[in-house]
Structure formats: structure tokens, C-alpha cells
Image (cartoon, rainbow, N blue to C red; front, top):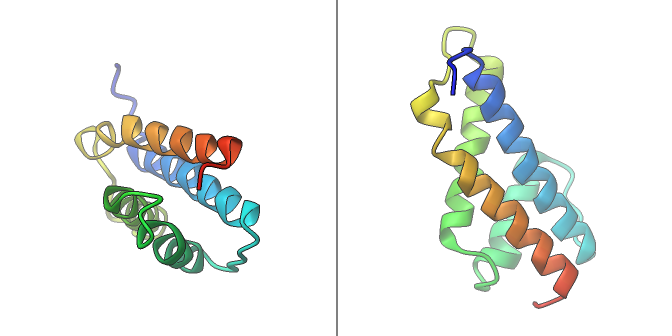
Length: 107
């Protein structure tokens, strides 16, 4: 993989893929949240604490949220390949797991 230097942008996109999967899960269950922090909190309360999603899922969401915030709003900081690359398969697995939950109605 070539180094093109857009790792903060990649972290942003990873965050939004996970975020919108969370929003879909909440909407599917009739749960509303109006902020990013609210979505994260509701996922924790309704799905992580109940064992439907894993503690690692909650950590991933939080990590990606922090990376997005830093990458988007801290002009003096850029994420590196080593920070972002390991999170790609984790984000993909999360989105697929949430999609499966919604499709199978297995919760």
C-alpha cells in the first residue's frame, strides 16, 4: 500500500462508517439520538451493557470518534498509517456485525 498521507481523512471515513452503522441500529430499534456523543452513549447503554455488542466495539467507536475529532479540528496533528491501518478490519467487522444484527433481528 503506497503512502499518500491521507491517514486523518481515512480515520474520518472509518469513524463515519461505524457511526452510521450505529445510527442505523438505533433507528431500527426506535431509539433517537441527536448528537454524535448521544449516539455513542445510546449504543453503550442499549447494546454494549446488555451484551448485544462487545466492549471492544465500544472502545473502537470511542477511539475512532477521538481520531476524527483530532484529525478534523487539530491543525497541528495528522494520524499516521500505523494508527489507522489496524482499525480498518475492525471497522469492517463492526459494520458487518451490526448489519447482520439488523437483518437477522437476532437481538
